[in-house]
Amino acid sequence: MLKFNKKFVDIGKEKIAYLEEGEGKEILLLIHGNMSSSVHYLPMIERLKNQYKIIAPDLRGFGDSTYNNAFNSIHELADDVILFLKKLGIDKAYVAGWSTGGAVAQVMAAKAPDVVKKIVLIESCSPKGYPVFKKDEKNQIILGKVYESKQEMAKDPVQIAPAVATIENKNFDFMDYLWNVAIYTAGNKPTPEDNKIYIEETFKERCLVDTDWALTTFNITNEPGFQTQGDGLVDKIVAPILIIWGEKDITVNKYMFDETARIFSKAAKIVNPDSGHSPLVDIPDKLSKDIADFCK
Image (cartoon, rainbow, N blue to C red; front, top):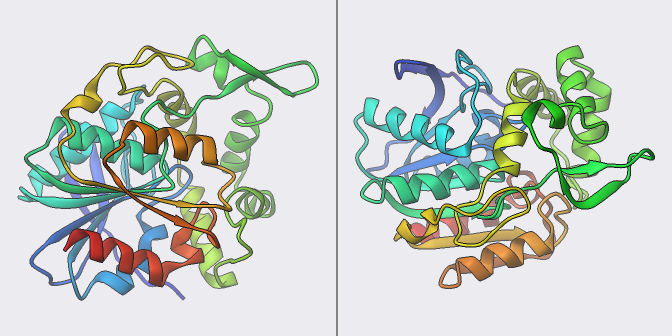
């Protein structure tokens, strides 16, 4: 069974919970995705703690971090993490971001290029965001038609409202079903004991609507997206990038991977044929080695 002990640091407007392991000289910062927390990184932490000092925060509104202020953008989460590192006295770090955490890592690399040495994007959100499309009367996606506001999007009958209700009601069976059909698509699963811990961490999330709105309005490119025109922040990223994607990932699909690879055309790329949206569970040995090799 997974074991962990979270620490806390006050960044002013919020208190950030985090895991800290390892005695290495180099810092490896791990940023989790939506419907998760730092705890989901424990398989990687166990494998990499002898090589790095690993810091894995819970983002605002996730895990055991506070949620004193709602947010509307990925930029706000990135600002939290940059301030978090400053509070810990960390001036340089390798940064890996999983899913939504990949978007946070991208903004960090643009806003704090002197802090971020390299970034690893693990099944990451595209630099042009992750759109939530409107649904018709039969709950089918209306491709290209997006919600006009966070409040309207919160009522989405397929992707948003059911997930919010599942978290609020702590419906373990349905959440387990969601992870099985959307995340563990490569046929691998955590042990029942670890799965329970992961889902209990998921139930701590209070900011699902904020996060989904932040993802659908995220666009740091110089191109128009489904929801917003890009802000061009991508031009400020100078850190080397590694993109890791699994062919069995249906949450971040091939189109999104190809889009990320096109925009970050100079990035190194690794495609794993036997992994889905959670290589942390599917291929933790290979994932850890690939990250360590890239960060050398």
